[in-house]
Length: 625
Image 1 (cartoon, rainbow, N blue to C red):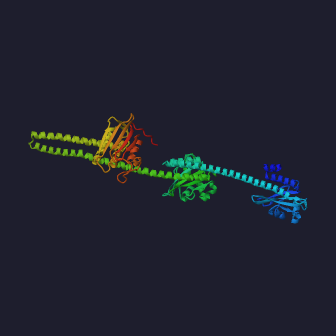
Image 2: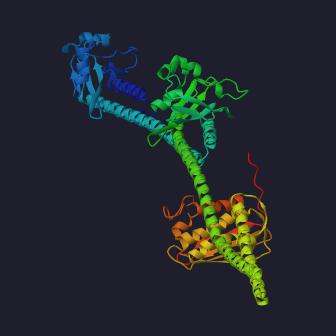
Image 3: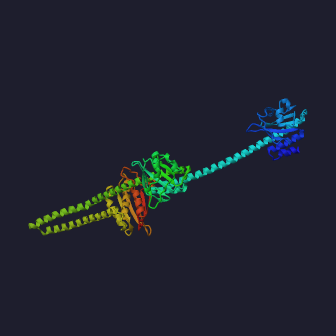
């Protein structure tokens, strides 16, 4: 029993354990032959796993071809089987091949089972006519049961090892997948950040610079280009490729030229991925295109000629419309991988949006310039009409006085020539003359002041000349030119400005700011009502700043609109006299020209207040490039 415990609890392999059990069986049962076979899972043959010591080292493999009878006996037996003689079963020839030194032995066959299936058998032999007693068969059965146990344990250990290897392999695969997902997530996040940076710009050169910088970092591209497609001209414009960080000269490509890669990309709307242009060009262009991979006109002075071997071209597509192409090139073959193509496709989507935004912004800027010009002309026209109306009164009074004086002079001349002139007539004439002169001087002085104000305001509004001026006088001049329009609509404007505030700034933009604020109040704040009240108040805010407030008691501004009133083209009176540019112009003039700031506060039904902080000395503008 100790021997069996040692065998069963040892860490030796299956072959060693079965060999020990076979050796023990031969000793305990006084067998002249003892061996154990198990079925090979790959071939199905019975392979000898252990045999009695002293026998041939190479035990033959039992299969249907070489040992048909023995194969049948060992593979089909259902229980312990005793044979009186090997010859009785037609096994003599096969037995001789198996064990030549034994003749006509008494055989005992014990099947080996595992997991409910026959996996082999043990074959034991006595000398002829020496039967197998029941206790010997029982012991043989028990030893074979131990073999079966070791076979099951070995299968279990194999299964455990396979399971462990599978778990380790699967764990490794999951780690790789996790790492790939992490890298992919990082790349998506990185591309999203790049996309936000790309789409935040409204300048094409800046867009190209940003995209090139990131592509050079991510891919290592030597040349990066954005081509803008002009369908009306059937041309692709390359405003400036970037070669190893240096800007190249602009050039054009004909979209119908079948020997150009950029033209193929735009014409077909398909990406191009080439790692060796000299082998792969026939899929895209003709052989003549190899000499036109780069346009020599695009090289700046001193730039070396570039011959690209690897290419990535991706069309810029937005809302199903092709707007251009992104080109990435390298002098090295196999410089790019498919992940680089995926990056380029992702960035091309952002670039298409950015370029579309830049184009739209450019169109809006041009439209804004036209509308601003029209707005200025309309304001100047309104100013001229107002001044003309204001001049009508003093000039009309002067004309009336002059005509009356002319009649009195003619009557006086008649009296003088007829010698009917009395002293009282002379006194009456001189008194009327004095009164008429006073009226003429007063009315002509008013007209002169109005003309002077008009000249100053109109000159300021049509230029941005910087000069020193008295704030109160400039505001008064602006108010006077608008007074007729204000009174005509039944409103009132009050001024409260200290006369000692002197600005070294731009009176023209200031006049336009005040004009727009007043017109905005009358158009929006006093819509549908009269007797509106406006006030312009100014005081020193600090040693270097003045605070100017414009208030009205109009309808106020809804909270939802308050944050948008300085946006270009935002108006609640579209098509009703509002262009949406008045307050946008005010904001730009205050911040960009006069170097100040503006804020607005309003409560619906309680009017609006604009608060401007202006420097007493405007900043010097940066020199234009």
